[in-house]
Image 1 (cartoon, rainbow, N blue to C red):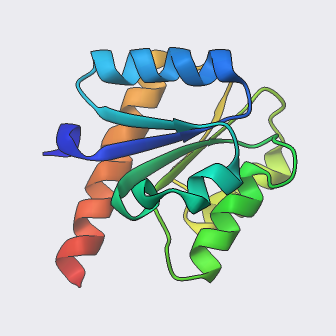
Image 2: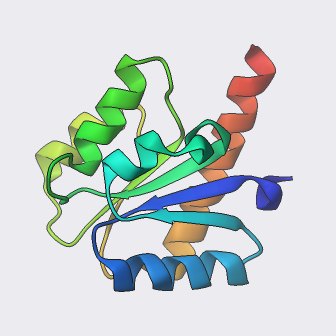
Length: 130
């Protein structure tokens, strides 16, 4: 069941990470929060992550760079990118790469829920194909 799968939230804004953790847990999901892409990549939880929610604008490694890195290293995870500064060019590129959703902050809860359902469905289909 999707609610048993781990969602990793990667955002350099601690307050946003905390609020996302509370929201996702209230929806019944298991959540781990990371304040940087490097923290996420170094975590043993990375291999158990069923869905990644990452901020586009972060220092050192952006959410877009993180997503590309995971794809290039063969560790693609269904991903939802979030940003306070949406860019249609980035949105189009990321959708072509397979990013599930590209959402604007502040998040609309129903949009996020729809994206999570889609990401878990895609992840389940990918596991079944293996």
